[in-house]
Every structure is written in C-alpha cells, then in structure tokens.
Length: 153
Image 1: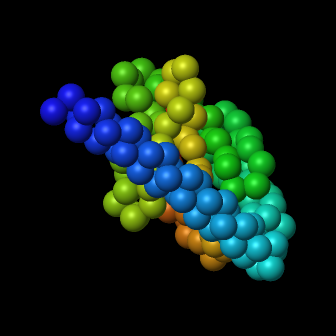
Image 2 (image 1 turned 30 degrees about the vertical axis):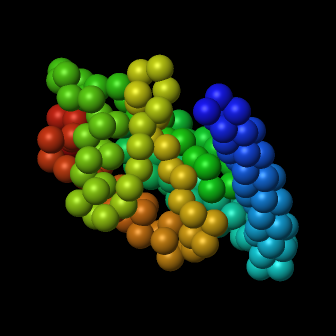
C-alpha cells in the first residue's frame, strides 16, 4: 500500500510538472501572438495618441472645475486628482464621482493615500469618441448641484 501511494505521488507530481510546462509554453505562444497584434495594429502608438487627447480634454475640464486638482498619466493609464471633500461637507468627492459615472455606464476607480485620485484605465481599443464620451459624462457629474461651490456662482 505504501509503495502505491508513493508511486501515485510521484506520478501526480510528474503530471503537474508536465501540465505546468505545457501551460507556460502555451502562454508564451499566446504572448507572441498578442505582441504581434499590438505591433500590427499599432496599439501602443494608438494608446499614446488617444491618451494625450484624453489628457488635453481632462485638463480643459480642470480649467473649468476647481474640484479637479491635477491630471496626470501616460498613454491610457491616467489619474485625475480631486479635492478630497467638498468644502463644508464630509462627502468623499472621488467616490461620489466614480459612483455617478456608473450611471453613465463608465467604470472608474479611486487610488492614492486619500482615495482622491480617479483612475482611468480603458482598454487598448479606446478611441477619441470614447474619450469625448468620458469627458462629457465627467463634466455632467461635476456640474451636479450638490458639487457646486456657492463662491463660484
């Protein structure tokens, strides 16, 4: 009985190692295919161009809304730093914006030690029209009456 279990353990270990090697080999093949698609479709260049367009649009929103403190990032990995709370309120601003953007069917998240940076991480196929839709929705959310500063009116 002992010999059987030992043999089964060795056999199981051999199978696991073979499967792991096969999975690694398959992953490397798929990685090569993926890299070929990225190069062929110029997705890296596309991400840089659309990302810069989105940064420009977000910086325009920053000039219009004092709640946006900074816009930063590269390519399609961007962050929009918001004021932590609305003046005179305990409302966590970035969380409010992220939740409201869901109503526009746009998924964002927050980051940073104060959770006041909105992360924008769209897929590589994100286009200028998508960037415009995101900025239009963000402008709509930032225009909510509960976010207006009475001093700005």
